[in-house]
Image (cartoon, rainbow, N blue to C red; front, side, top):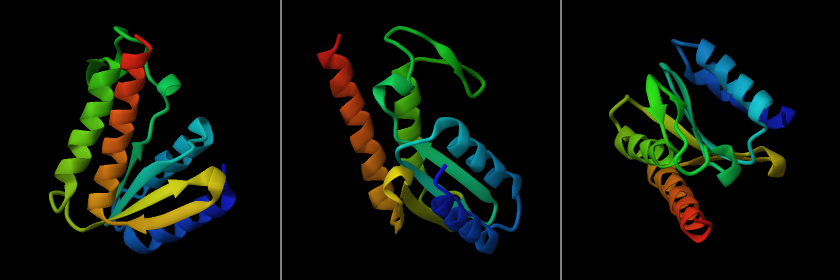
Length: 135
């Protein structure tokens, strides 16, 4: 885990969050266990949320279903669900801040909702192209 990125996240969370501070513990656990190359981090008074920017190897194989939220899902459902969720966020969960984070490069950058959506949309398009080409 990139300590500088973690400390920046902790500072932002500490100044922003009023409720559900335990969300940040899940964020820390995500960074420690997954060692992500990049992700979108959303911070609001009532918690945080991470939108993963997936690599093909992070997801199930074609046709495979895995536990997801309260059921089972395949890789297309997982990535499309993330895109749909981030598209709907703007204002629907109250005021929130979006950050693009790439720990290996030391990038911690505040972004707008529109840019966050585009980053996730591009990730979905890249994954789906990869799946078509390797099918």
